[in-house]
Amino acid sequence: MSSAFPEIYLVRHGETEWSLSGRHTGRSDIPLTAKGEEDARKVGPRLQGLSFSAVWSSPSQRASSTCRLAGYGDHVVIKPDLAEWAYGAYEGVTTKDILAARPGWKLFRDGCPDGEAAADVGRRADNIIAGILEANGPILIFSSSHFLRVLAARWIGLPPDDGARFILDTTSVSVLGYEHDLTEPVIRHWNGH
Image 1 (cartoon, rainbow, N blue to C red):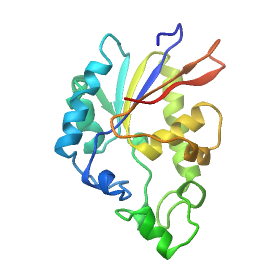
Image 2: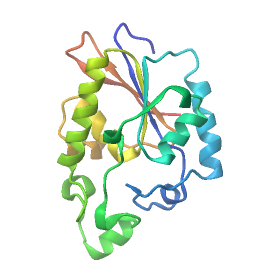
Image 3: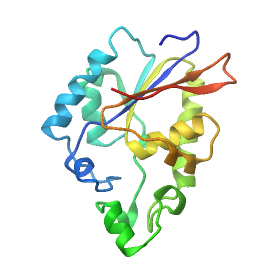
């Protein structure tokens, strides 16, 4: 999957108790499960042979632990803008329970009371993209599902709420890059295992 242009590898963190149960995990610092740790260790071999000019992680322990267990902890830079969506009143609540109280609710369209809207997450994603463009080299990023989905949408010029059109499994690896030149950002690979 090599390219003449820098590629950005995105890794969603390993499984946590809350990701397993479908609870919205924004700023709560939930650790990886034993399976999450095991799967995080398998990320390193999947990236074997690749070199990165930078390794960035969300401040959450689930992302930074995934980074460390994958073998990239020695060079990681914590980037606060990589934090997962702030779910506010919906932190720790499942979509099913939210829909029971608020029928028709959609995260990417409606956001969260006392939390972020898609546009807020989009602004943070745009900050990360600006850093990627400034670095102009291959970067490895560890973060969470909803943030990475917004980042992918913004990378290809879509509005933040179009992140709803992407899905990410735990410890999946995705690749952002370019087609013909640096003016043509693309998603080169998505949700790989």
